[in-house]
Image (cartoon, rainbow, N blue to C red; front, side, top):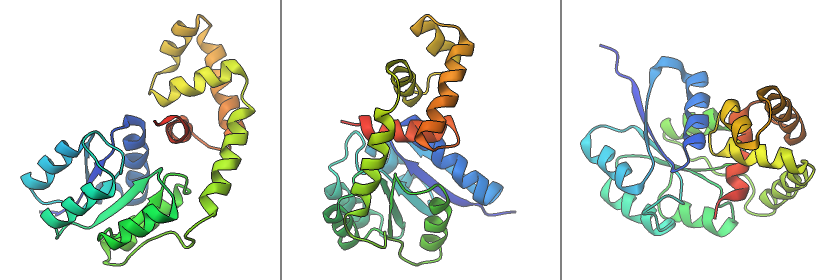
Length: 211
């Protein structure tokens, strides 16, 4: 019987979970069993219910108190390595995550290729943290913000709907335009943002619209 690596993805945003699932499936295929949780309570239920080999954890989920919740999880489930996947990229937060026992910290602005690198490192027992402790994420933010600002008003509306996981047909209905028009907008949005899929565009939207 094949024993799969069980990875728990903890993030309240469905598009982020989908993006992480797609990246892990592409890199590791069927060797990974992926489970998802959208709240801290659900994360705890999965951890208590059975074996989890790795937890990918957002710091901003319902029930979370950022690094304070991380401290509690490390105390209650010390055998499960935790890789933080967060839009909170301040050097202070990264240092706190390291000090509280996280095995790694993956900024949501990181390239998709970094996901498999980070996961592989943490599963091998290594630590995986950004090479710089400040400044780089601000540069990324500025570049992405400038690209978002370059979207037309209608493209921006479509962009925000992508973040909500809405399909083209539903977006077309809500905006009262043809579905082909929405497809054209999506293509232009991907080009302007410098991403390759609507899932990646949704990740960018989630990063800049989270409150």
